[in-house]
Length: 235
Image (cartoon, rainbow, N blue to C red; front, side, top):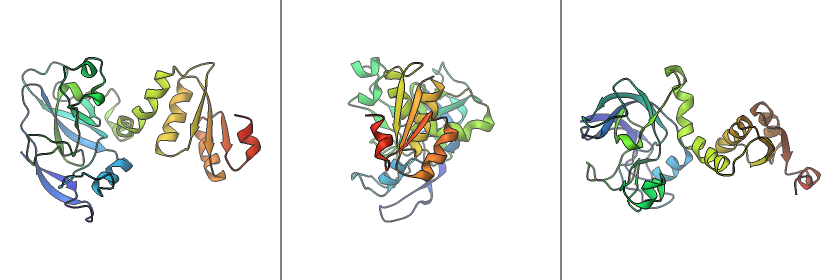
């Protein structure tokens, strides 16, 4: 099926509208009408081939949220109308040790949401800067937030999980102290998540302007690296 998307035809060209082809849903696939897709800086690196290996046309986007519009006849978890999300993985072998442990990102046959080899036209995956996407149900996530909050949910599928994963691994919570270095796209989420988990949060920044911006994010302390005495208190 032909749909509209936004992508680049080369590293030197800006993003522009284009027509792309999506496969029809298979037995285990979910077809999603995309409502929002976050912009991650890795999307820009890929589009510009700054990490090398980009295949064109490149349609980036891996912070995808939307509504299910069709499902395959063997799909059990989702139905048309469900609000769902898709992150940076759309396929893997499904049976190796890593996949069995829920660590599909370590699978030797992991397929990224875009710029990964696939038998579908045009031979590589195309991402979420598009009207629709078709994904195996295993790689679809249920979203329980209301429709009006979907735009805010999208970045959680990359920046959110990137910061939540280590916080969960190290069991951040009451009685523990978490340091967050940098208060950008990832850092501000790290602060909010660590605070929500009950940890004492110390944010580290290089500028006084960012210090003020960090306070509403619920950082318990904000340390400016230009002040050695502040840094010394946390060595």
